[in-house]
Length: 97
Image 1 (cartoon, rainbow, N blue to C red):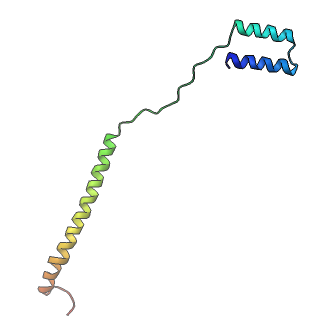
Image 2 (image 1 turned 120 degrees about the vertical axis):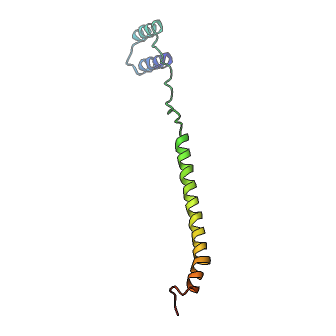
Image 3 (image 1 turned 60 degrees about the horizontal axis):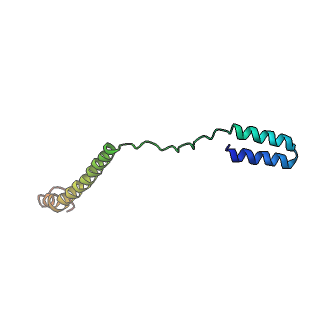
């Protein structure tokens, strides 16, 4: 508590009748002679910044692999349906009569 808070507390005790005028003066003099120590405000905690560049690079690499896999599947489907499947039917390999 600060000095102001302590003096306010003593004043409230005097007004409520818990302290006599003489006790109030003595407590006030003692308080002014040896004021309470005011602690500096505690700093707020901030988590340290974590260097996540390796994690970002790994995410980028995984995203690249996913995109390349999808592109590869599209190219394979185009090749299968446009080139291989029609040629296989012309050679008499399977299909309906």
